[in-house]
Every structure is written in structure tokens, then in C-alpha cells.
Image 1 (spheres, rainbow, N blue to C red):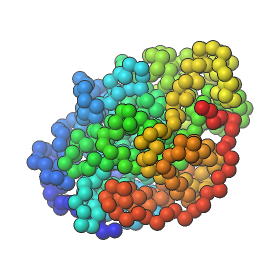
Image 2 (cartoon, rainbow, N blue to C red):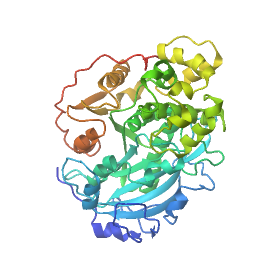
Image 3 (cartoon, rainbow, N blue to C red):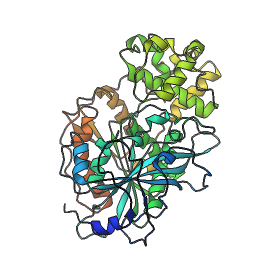
Image 4 (spheres, helix red, strand yellow):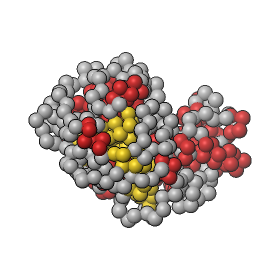
Length: 482
């Protein structure tokens, strides 16, 4: 499909007066700001002030607007050519990129996932194409694309937008001419400050709102250049975040019309897994299974901080390990548990009362004997909601690789079983030779065309040819309740 620019590169760049950093390395902390300009439809002229420093985007937000998605701070970052984007999108195997990008860092207003619906804020990186993608002969404006990041640590320095962590997913999108906002989620910016608990790992009500409000923020930045259509793309944990946002979209609003969702190898398993882990702890030592144990710690600690209040993240952990857990959550950006500080397996980390109350019920679906179990069982269920009504009809594409060992085939079967039970409108795009991350490299170009078919009037791409022989869903854990 031919791609044409809505306006010339010269006009696009005329809207921006800034120092440039043409590298693809660390943040350009000396970037300038965009100047005011009249807004030409489709020109991607910035419609909010861009006078903040990059550092300030990750600091105190100041007074919070009541308007969800309101851009609180905006900083101009580097510009990247299409050649730089393609070089940085390592292992990408699709068509050559057709667009470079202007990059911004923003902080926007959102809402937290606690019962009080506390006002919150999320940092994000925004990629704006210098050669927007449009269908031949079409005046259709670009969709808003929200990109959900995979698993990172929950501490402030782990904010994915501070580096090029998700370049493998975001660069093919903007390199194909799409405008993309990639939120960190509430809790990363201004980490640890009052009224700002950490991002609650896989909490649908928390991460889902940050994701949906990212679409609102991007629309406020470039309202004249985007259509009402929204596409959410995510990989692994980000795929789970995307599906969680979908489940909230009807009640919370999607910042537009949700036209489709792409979930690469999504973590859409029963969240009871993290409470159930002690049942099979000997199969998952901290030394050899750092990812599984880290996610269990991140999930339970951050939920405690958000839902039970400041200082209560440590309640489910052994008293002697609480300080080490707190430090780990605040500082570890990758799963690198230290057994010398925490123990041999998760039974040495969790409090015995939590293990006795929750683990058997989580692993085997047993009834609860006390309020602690009921509380956590309700949280596990809330973080894997069913799709109902119009939400179940939103098109979902699930790229998945036959050599994935992170979301292994029997775990992916659990994902598909759940979507089947909900009668969700999904299609599996199976790549037999792809592992967990390479499936993004190998299918990004196909996804670009799939998005164009749903938002730009382009032809539907040929169906993925791979055939997935679905095994039985793995259990226990994760057990498939509820």
C-alpha cells in the first residue's frame, strides 16, 4: 500500500523549534520546546505547550486538572530519522520504514484503581511520524495508538519511557507512519511521594485507567490530526494490560472508539497464580525462577500499597523480609532476586499467615476460611474480568509464537479458553518459529497492515498461515477459576 504524507516534512518541522539529538541512546535532557502555530488538520502541530524539561515530567505534577487525560507537562525530546528507527528496531523483519519521528515526554492526568478513585498521573513517551500513514486517496486521519509495555520493575527509575525498552514494538509502529503514545502507568513518575502509590502490577482498575487515559492525552496533544479511532497494542504483561483496558473501556470510556486491540503473547492468566505459588514453591526456587517470583512479589506488594494504604504493601510478607521486599520493589528494574536476602523460595518471603490463608484456595479453588483469603481472592478475580456486551465484540488479534517459553503453549491455551468462554471476537496469529519477544519482530509488519484495515480503509491482510495445536490448559496453578 502506498503511503503519502498529509503535509510536507518541512511544514511538520516548522511547528517545532528545538535542539535536536539525532542519536538513539540516552534521553536528550537539553531538548527545546515547540512554538505556537496555527493548527492545520493532519499536520501534527502540537496543540499544548511544550516548555517543560524532561526531568520535570517525572517529578511533582503540581496541581492536578479534573480533566482525565489532561496534559500536565510536556517536553520535546529528540527527533529520529526513519533510518535510525529501523536500526534501533533490532531483529525487525518487515518492510522498510517510511517515517521518522518526533519524540515527546509527557505527564498526564489519570485515575487510580483504588475504591476512592484517587486522582493520579502517568508519564509517557509520544512518537509522532514525520510521514503519516494514510490510505491511497483517503482523507482519513490517523488512529490513536496506545502501546502497553511489558514487565519491568515497579520503581520510578524503571519507567519504560526513560529508555528505549519497548523500541522493538513502538518503532515499527511509528516507522510505518502511526502516532503512538506509550504510557508508563500511574505510580512511576514521582515514585514514592505522598498520595502516589506504586503502579499496581496487573491491577485492571489501575493500569487499565492509565492506558485508556493515554488515548485522551494524545488526542489533546493532536486533536486535529487524529480520528476518533483507538487501537491498543501490548506485549506480554502489556498484552494483559491491553485486555484489562478493553474490559474497562465501556464503563470508563476509551478516549474515542476502540477499533481493535493487539495482544502479543498476553499475560491473561488467573492472577491467583501469585497467591498459589507457595503450593509449588519447590518447583520455582528464587535462584532459577526470578521472573515468576518477582511478579508474585510485585503483584502482592503493589496491590497492598494501593488498596490497603501506604505501608501495607509489606503485610503479606514475612516480617523479617519486609524491608528487603520494599527495597527490591523500589530499585529492581529487572527480575534479579537475591536469595541471600530473601531465602530459597517464595515460602521464605511470604508471611506464614498469608500462605495458610490464601495458597490452597488460590491454587485449587477452595473456599475461604477467613477475611484475608476473601480479600485476595476478590482481587485475583477482579484482575481477570470477563468480557461482556459490546466489549466482547471489539476485534482482538493475538500474535503468538510456537517457541514461547514465557507464556508456554499450555498457558496460552488458558488465555484462549477464557476468551472462548467470553465469546470474544479474537483471531490467533500463530508464528511456529517465534519465541516470546521475537514474535513481535516477526509480526510487527503484519500488525501495521491489520491496524490500517480497521482504521484507514486499507485492505485486510492475508490471514496468518500458522496452525496452533492447542494443548490442554495448564492447571494447577494457575487454576481457571473464576
